[in-house]
Amino acid sequence: MAAGLTIILGAGMIFINLKTKVPWVKIPNSNLNLISQEINLPPGSLFCDLGCGDGRVLFFIEKQELKKGQPLKLVGYELAFYPYLRGQFLKFWFASKVELKNKNFLKQDLGAAQGVFIFLVERIMPKVALALQSKLKPGALVISYAFKLPNWRIYKTLETKPSQTYIYLKN
Image (tube, rainbow, N blue to C red; front, side, top):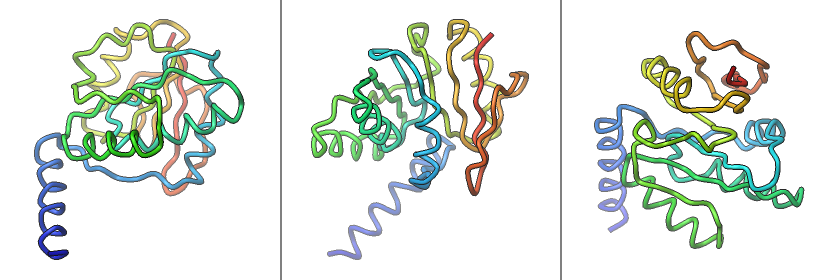
């Protein structure tokens, strides 16, 4: 039984990679802690995770922001169904207010977002950079784990391991 479940979940992960062409990889908690310290938005601000997987980054940020007494409106977009479904379970389990959407973030209106987080793959970053340039308002915070946004000026670099984290302010 356990072997069958492992095969099904493994096949699900392969499907995710074929469908979205973006692997689902977890970020170390030590890096999440450093990243969350860079989010200094006013309470109630909209912060989105674009390609949120199971929502783990947003759940972490929610916990940190609640400790500060400055809750944000947190929304994640995930195209692949398995991590989205897992995220819905975790949302229920943690009694979280994070909103997870099984939608393509490239087709969403992100104009109200005051901050976004992205951890995708290098080959789609040019498309993401163009979308964010046209959709975000000036001054929006953009945090990109591992991959740079082409033609964007880096505001700050975090020395996270194994990958650096790039912080941008939309001009």
